[in-house]
Structures are given as structure tokens and as C-alpha cells.
Length: 119
Length: 110
Image 1 (spheres, chains in turn yellow, green):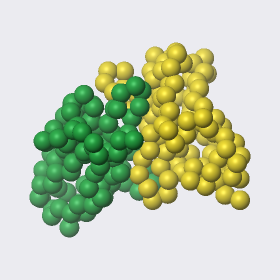
Image 2: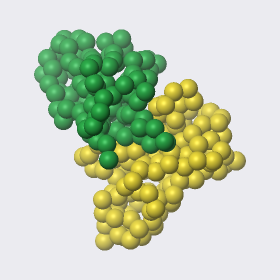
Image 3: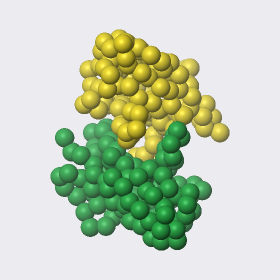
């Protein structure tokens, strides 16, 4: 069974940093591209970042480019999101999602971790 | 920057048919955008309904269908049920490694 479990969320002050993790199991992690998606309270979904299976390419939404860094450790079956220069508008539930190997869509999602940026 | 547009809200009667759409602020949605539709209830992760324009995800009832209607992607629910009351999001692949979600449609069944 495919499982994605996010962790690392919490309360952080504006301007601060936080690192999110996503532990993957139930599939061959090293062969799939992975993504981060967020959802601010009461708002819609926002795609943030994609990383290919071998980390050869990373892509970012304009809203986080230069502040967030996606990475992965295939030996640990883990995906990461390093967030810096955090703003109040970064407050959201952050989901990791697996990109389907066949067609361009996100087929499995974690339950999310809440990040709150507030003083 | 291109915006993906969805109706903010929609209402359907139980047993009725509703079509939700997913468009672009500039241009037309085609199969090349690989439209995906997700259903989300409060506090839950999104659930895939349709991917690659019109392919139903495993376990999704056949009353959900996807298509291209005119210049938009469309999700049609035939025979709406009370538990279809949810938020629905479309996702488009914009190329060059970038995806964009629509703003979502809140569907009410009453």
C-alpha cells in the first residue's frame, strides 16, 4: 500500500525557516517524481514544487521560487521541502504527492502537515 | 501568469446532472494540459476522480466523467448524490515542469 507521511510542520515566526519531510513507503520511491502542494486555511490547492526521480530537475511555482528548496534522499525514501524567509501567507497545510509514472498527474497524497507562520 | 478558472460554486439537485468546467485566463484547455480532477472534503487530502482528461481513477463511480467541452476541461456528474457535496479542483500541466490548480468549485447538493 502506498503511504506518504508528512512531518515537520509547526509554528514559525515570520522570516524564519522550516524543513518539511515526507516519508514514503509501499512503492519504489526512487523511480517516481515527487511534488509538494499546499492549501491555505479555507483556500484552494496550490502546486509548489516538483523533483524528478534522480533529482536531476527541480521546478518551482513563482510564489516560492528562491525561498523554498525541494530535495530527496532515495536511500531513505524521503522527500523534503526546505522553507526560508517564511511569510504569514505561507501558512497552510503542506501535502506531498507522488507524480504518476504514466501520465502527468498526482496519484497519491499524504495527509498533510500544518505550517503556521505567525509572531 | 496564466490563471486556471473554475466556477466558485455550483448547486445541483439530488439525481441531477452538473458539469463543472476548468478554463484558462488566456487560451484554450486541450488534452495536452492533461486535465486532472480532484474531489476534496474538509480536512481530507484530495481524491483523484479523473486524470488525463477522461480516465476515471480506480474505484471512482462511472457517474463521474471528464471531457473537453469547447475550450475548457469539464467534469460531469450524472445522478448527483448527497455525498458528492465537496470541493472540486482541476489541475493542468502547463509544461516546463509546472502545474497549476484551478481555484476550486464548491458543489452543493440540495
